[in-house]
Length: 328
Image (cartoon, rainbow, N blue to C red; front, side):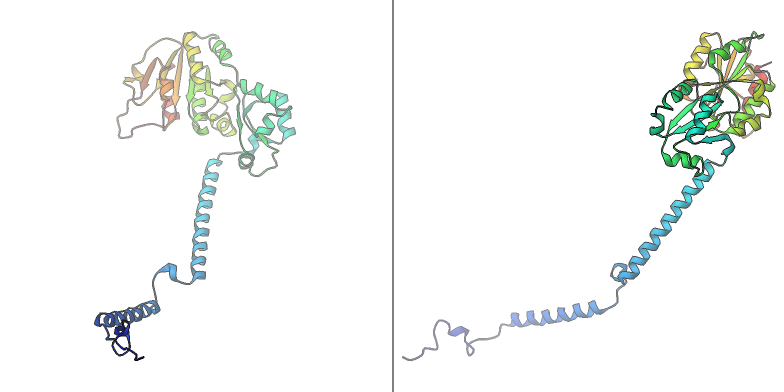
């Protein structure tokens, strides 16, 4: 049988096949693109992620250490600033030492303890009683107490002693009226700088005020720095530490006292105030002044008129000027 070369597959045979020009151009472009890819891939790159892996890891670790050192430096600076006024002579730490101080009735300004110590049988009742007397009892972490005591073996509790005994607000009211018809009391709202507190106490005693009222929170206690700046005034002036400042002001108003607050935003001048009543002078912090809630308990808000370009005075200076005028 004769082989028929024109079968249906014949057009694909070697003899009959003709190269398609489109196919030829495609193969040329393909080889050209391949050569370009190889050429580009072999060129050095500036991309930092395609560099040496070890170099990149080294740089990453170096940057991490640098950031960590900066962070630690900031924390150390904050720590040093926060405890710059801390005098370890004012502090007692350790279970037995603190327990002896609590049982002896020693004047105490502040207590820091862990939750385990506060709920223990030895300390629970004692801490509750002393808190009701106006002493600030704070439940903090173990590391916080280590910071305060500068790494001492504290066993989870520490206290800061007070340089004078404090009395209840009711006792201060009775004491202030002894041989005085118009006594003057000084109330500090949010003054945390011990130098300002000491200077105000010194001015109050010098101008014949009957006592000082300090809130349990947001106020410097009667520390060694306060005692030093007060220069002996603490021995001749009654101090009351109150749990709730606004409640105490309401009590004073019910007892016939006028509550006068110092504020740079007030409209009335302190030099035009001539009311002849028992007074409570409320002095706020240098930055924030008297809190808005406490201002609502004030019968009068007074200011010191300033002539110069200075917009405000130091808290202790402002207190001294007002106490001098209002105690005349």
